[in-house]
Amino acid sequence: MLNTILSGDFPRSRLLTIVLIVIFISLAFAPFLFPGTRSLSVAAKICYFVVLVASYDLMLGYTGIVSLSHTMFFGIGAYGVAIALNNMGASWGAVLLGTIVGLLLAVVVALVIGLFSLRVKALFFAMVTLAVASAFAVLASQMSWLTGGEDGLSYSVPKILTPAYKLMDDKLFGVRMNGRIVAYYLVFSVSFVLFLVMLRIVNSPFGRVLQSIRENDFRSEALGFQAVIYRSLASCLGALMAALAGVLAALWLRYTGPDTTLSFDIMVDILLMVVIGGMGSLYGSVLGATIFILAQNYLQNLMGAVSDATAALPLVPELFHPDRWLLWLGVMFVLSVYFFPTGIVGRLRSSS
Amino acid sequence: MSMTHPTHSPEEHPVLETHGLTIRFGGHVAVNDVSCAFRQGTLTAIVGPNGAGKTTYFNLISGQLKASAGSISLYGEDITRLSAPARANKGIGRAFQLTNLFPNLTVLENVRLAIQAKSRIGLDIFSMADRHVELIERAEHYLHRVALIDRARDTASSLPHGDQRKLEVAILLALEPDILMFDEPTAGMSVDEVPVVLDLIQQIRDQGDKTVLLVEHKMDVVRSLADRIIVLHNGFLVADGDPAEVIASPIVQEAYLGMGASSHV
Ligand SMILES: Nc1ncnc2c1ncn2[C@@H]1O[C@H](COP(=O)(O)OP(=O)(O)O)[C@@H](O)[C@H]1O
Ligand SMILES: [Mg+2]
Image (cartoon, each protein chain N blue to C red):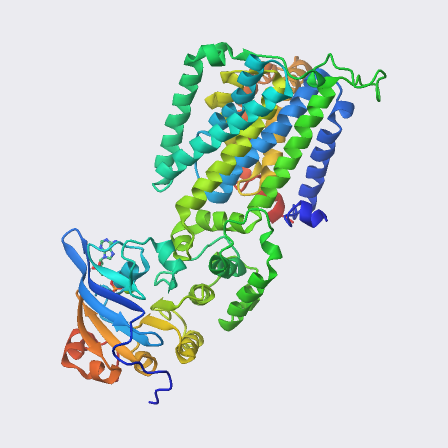
């Protein structure tokens, strides 16, 4: 049973298993364990970023495709829903239509980029994806009548997902049961299912071919696997999953703009999360996304506390001033790559 | 030497044929106007000094390189324009002179992938690969045959050189092609490993239905295994015929064996 759900892909390390269970339980009960708007938003962001990062790892870690356009697909999914909700009003029909159009667009764009440029060198492919993603970001900001330009779009979502909706009159475990709880569980459960679907894909016969192409595409072709076809399909699946993560982000945030979806900063974040967690293992995406987003949101608080506590010392409080959080994030990244070149998952597995 | 495997009438269609096959690298012609037909159930040895164009000839047949001129036909069908994977799917299997594995995958997975290729389930994204038990069992069968079953769970890159060569052979066998091309399969192997691979090639030949192309330098091996020898030299096909005759021919004595590749001819 568990074997089937996890597609036979167990964490294969006791510590990793424990960490994953802790993350899973924390996310599954986040509204009750960590009440408050901010922490729920962090939890939701972790959920859809796990999908986004895992879908990137499907391409980078499993297939060896270096793409720099992943945020574009994330954005296509988000804008699809955002534009539909903005123009059609807060209905599930709009969500459905926006999702379908977004997914179709994502797959078609991924397929076109793939078939035209995946036969060439990896570096060239990275350049092409970067160019396409930049062009797309410019396009999105220029077409402000549709996308809201640099300001993005704020829109209403179906009522059941809003704070105004009352799930029950009484509080449950001291938590007010409103539509945000519904929205959170929508994000959580869809993310969870998508993660399991990806886990199945990488452990399927198809996933094995992807790994053979990553390892040695020349040999894989000599066995009869047409690398460009498999790479294109992997890109399409990655794009599809990224777009679905975008849909979740759009529904959760009730706002879609360049800075939450299309920005190159997010592309860099995704890369860091994959590398920190460990390439070529989807569990790495869970760890990478969780650690990175927690750091992004709480490192400043933590540093503020350290800075205050050490106020009497010279220099130290300056070093830990909350404004330096990005520096410390960088230090953490360099250290983690130095000490865990195969990511946290690779490290945990090799030590067990 | 007894000839137990089937003989063929000359008018029978060859399995594989090259017509005026040529490839140029800049000004250098590595394979020059080579026409040759290979009949089913035969083992043809391809000999010639280093740089003669043997590996390049293989690369042209299995599709890793595109011909500058000439054509290749398989069962009478022109396959000159087909990609390497398409040719593999039509039954042309290839082992490489320079070991060419999936280094970070297990030994078992290296072989299993070849079997999966043959079973055409590569686009199945929803089943679990490990639930296709019959593929794993067949992979294990081939690992037994090359005496690598004990290393099945290790990564390919962790194997010593000789074992990697054997794995290379196992992958080719597991692909179960109609045409098997071995490019110096025993090169760099220790003396006790060589017979394992040669016995396998002998078994394939004795099976009688496969067409084998073998690049091999050891003349005693070639003489006992091959039905026929062709000699490449500077890209040209310079001799073709019965092993004993070809080995005795002046052109071979001079062009190849004169270089001291074998002691007793
Ligand atoms: N990709 C290539 N580019 C340029 N020259 C090549 C290439 N492949 C082979 N050659 C040249 O073609 C000739 C034949 O090489 P090869 O087929 O490997 O010989 P053999 O296998 O008989 O030792 C050599 O001179 C080699 O340098
Ligand atoms: Mg060679």
